[in-house]
Length: 170
Image 1 (cartoon, one colour):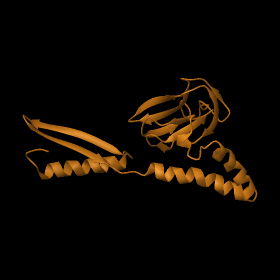
Image 2 (cartoon, rainbow, N blue to C red; image 1 turned 135 degrees about the vertical axis):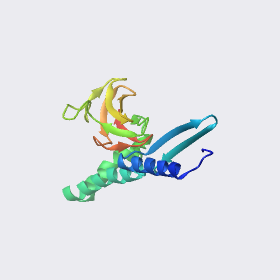
Image 3 (cartoon, rainbow, N blue to C red; image 1 turned 90 degrees about the vertical axis):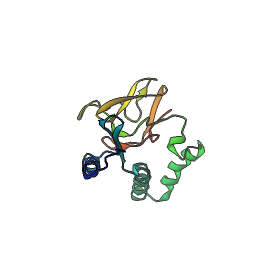
Image 4 (cartoon, rainbow, N blue to C red; image 1 turned 90 degrees about the horizontal axis):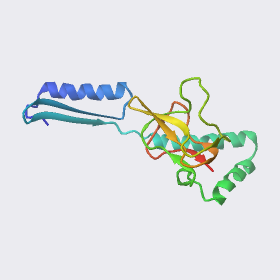
């Protein structure tokens, strides 16, 4: 931190925190140089539980849909294949594509365009399956293997965390 701690530095740090919240960022790092051997390094991090919030939403949707359609039998039948393959957690599935970064997930190259893939699409290894925007950079996420898209676990335009399962390819 700077040798010259002042109200201006405190105001600067407060402005960074506001900027973080206003622009829905999770982390901001800045270094201010004041001169020889005098600088201020600031790292502002907002703890976000996006993964914890996303997982219950993904599980709650099928649970809500099953009782409306029929009693518990279809829900049990849908859960049985996942348990039979030992893939209760989508992130542990051998065909899971996981997020290599924190960012916003987009299923198409631009709004209104045809999605890169949908459930049932055949993909080849290296083919772009979605985009994750991180720090205003569009990162194309490739299929890790050839196969068929069995499940898409993310929603277009929603945030994803590092390591979060994005889709299943078998």
